[in-house]
Every structure is written in C-alpha cells, then in structure tokens.
Length: 222
Image (cartoon, rainbow, N blue to C red; front, top):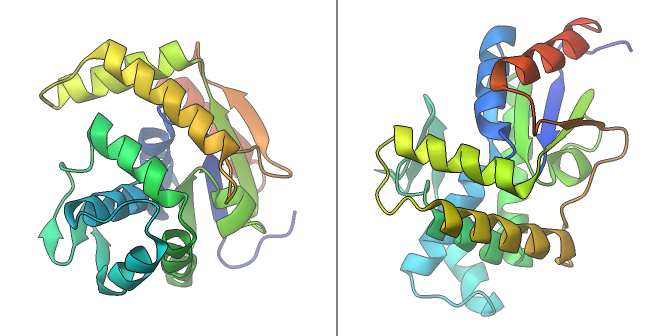
C-alpha cells in the first residue's frame, strides 16, 4: 500500500468493545490525532434531550442542530463552550446517542464536522460507521467486537474506576444488548463491518494485546 503524506485509521464496533481507550492509546503511540465520534453523538443526544425535543421530531431536530457547537480539545468535549466530558459517559446518554443518531438531520450535521478533522493531519476515528460512511477510503480499517457480557464488564469497571454513580452491571448489559439491536437494524448507517476491514474479537484479549495487534498491522505498512 502506498500511503499519502497523511492517513486515516478507522476503528468500528459495537458499544463497549474497547474502541475509545484503544484508539486513544494507539493515536498516542503513532503520534496522530484521535477523533472520538462516539463522544460527538453522545453530545448531540444530550443536547437534544436537554432541549426536550423528541427523537421523532425531525423538523425541530434539524433546526436545533444549527445551534450545536462542538469542540474537541485535549481529550475534553465542549458543547457550546460548556465542558460535558463527564456528563456524556453514562448509560442514559449511551442510549440517547443511539436513539438520536438514527435521525438524518443529526447525522448530516455531524458528518461534515468529522470529515473536516482529517484536514489537520493523520488521525484515528472510532465509532460505528466511520469505516463504512465517514471515511470509506481510509487506509486502515478495523472492526473490534466482543461478547455483550465482556463489553458490559469492561464498561462497568471503567465507570467504577472513574467513580461514576449509579453504576450497575445488569443495567449496562441490558443497555448494550438493546443498543446492539437498535444500531444494527436502523435504516440510516447501520452498524456493520466495513468493506475491507479487519475483524478482531477482543473478548479474551486485554487492552495491551489489542493495541499490540493493531500497531503491528499499521506499522507493517507505514
């Protein structure tokens, strides 16, 4: 593969597959940008829900998104100049992100923002449709997956380490199973393995092992 001056790595997969933490660390090791698309959609879900707009109200959503101003800076997420980094890391917001991201107006408003990020250099983008929709021509595509139970345990431990309140494994597992079904069946940009992506099951791998695997595949080319 002949790479350009800059390149894009996409990491797709279901909720709790370890995409965010793996992507952050891999970006650091490669010295490139990290684009957390999950945070972008969680922010949109939180924004619209706080406005009291229902997921099926397309017209109000489209109008509201005109006032949605997002900034990603130093691993922090700012919505209209307000730091919401911790607010968006809850099971409730996970569900809001899934529900509102199915809306065409939301996705169209966020597509351009995401694609523009590659203008700043090489990057890693992680989410559920980054390799199939946002960056279909990415030089590297990966799809991380794991059993719902393994993903729920990871999410539970992650929140426990951060001192998140109302942290319940059973509720997390239920939310993950529900989100899997919703994300895979939605009409717009459903969760799927992108064409040309390398599938990696992380159920019985720790984070270091996953990163080592991805790093070896990328460095063998660059």
